Image (cartoon, rainbow, N blue to C red):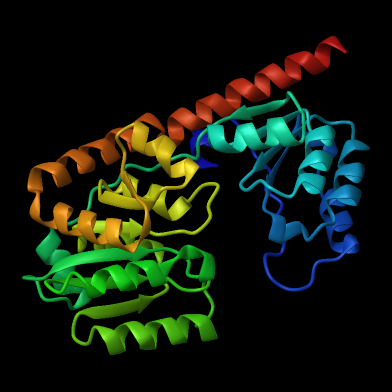
Length: 321
């Protein structure tokens, strides 16, 4: 929003409750709170869990307002829901070619376009300073994961790989959003600490002001997701200029082709690449440069300009109707 504001765009933000039971009445209230006389268009940020299959009525009410509707799909794959959104939106934004191909192919809508998820290039403090701040031995080589934790994030793969890299330590930052630990997280933490005593540390949820310190303590960041359409946490690691290893999923392969990261398949391959990156400073530096270049290419100001161009295009089309 701040990047759009820098371009002179005035935004009115309506916050949908993230947690708790969603009802059609709650979503209707969201629609009713839109100041129709003050806005030129409506831009929806869509996540499946936020709308819990109530999209039909919600988008039906939005259409009745008579304003252009743009939707950013942060995930794709529920074709019934995607079709409702694509048919009701003037434009649908996705973040990569993989998502565009799935929505365009499965839902058969031509109004789907790509605007990559933005990045905020950020410098980390010196590595040893970060380690001391977190309470990690400055002499240790740290492999990290920073992000939300759930069973599709694949941390079991990272833990198993790190068992085979005895000369490095594992740092895990994150939780289930901002809430207390889930049973799954507690079990995973206890198992990893039991298997790697004295070389495994869990930080819990990492607030924004501690992200640079957490990323800065790590030589390598790993994202072992089993499924992903995009990853804000991975993009945050790239924004901090870190060497990143990610599961060989199609959205991550796209970034690998741009030189932003390296992908892996399975525990053995991950183990080999962790060892390689920890020892090969030249390779690690190349990935760090690639990460920074990616973050600059897709910085928030540049992505804001692409959004503004799209807004203008949609509004011009409406004038011709």
